[in-house]
Image 1: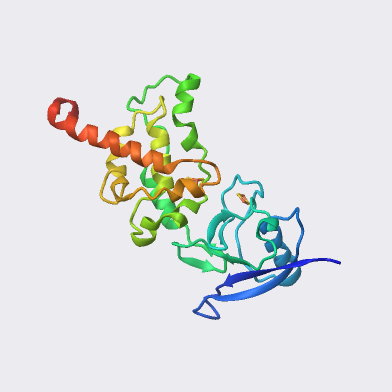
Image 2: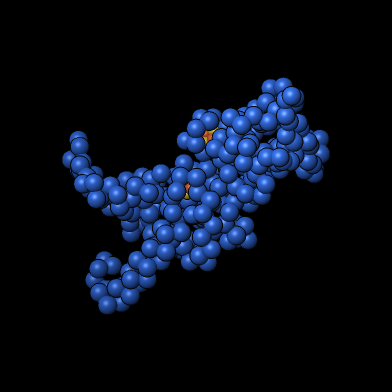
Length: 246
Ligand code: SF4
Ligand code: FES
């Protein structure tokens, strides 16, 4: 006999109702299905109006993040089995405005990401073209932060971002630090003016949930703490060695 499991999905359609409401769906309980498979079953077989984002189905694109039983997760990476016998509560990522159903508005994150200048900055426009080799150790300096897939789970897990939406947030800071630590980059000083301003690293109260929920084992909490240390050192150096500021 086929077994079913219930998904309680938080729906929102601003054209029909100003409130979010839960809608329950029975989906086949298959041990090889992830949550995203169950949502696609709803979309294909039960209710084509359900809206959600996804693309790669393999934990790479970062677009399928949702709250599952109150935890921010990638729905393509969580098996239905984990939540048996259900019901399973599916909601949009918290701390973001909802566009429709499980789709959140991402522009705040995109603006913050751009503000940290997530690209290699060089002072010298005449930098030689061609290969710029790095040692394995130089690569390891920033590799962890380069694994970020911009899924925004860390923003949903961060209580500081929940209370203070102006906070730059875990991923934008980790990605800024990724470029700071790249031996090819020379933009640390200008990037750090953004990272260490009022809405930057000093807002973090070291809860650490950002690192705990990250599906790619990025450690934004470590990036923030190391930036706090380097920023403090730079502050004192600016008094002891003022000529370095020029
Ligand atoms: S740091 Fe981790 S949780 Fe945050 S956006 Fe990047 S991959 Fe997602
Ligand atoms: S669908 Fe791409 S990360 Fe889940």
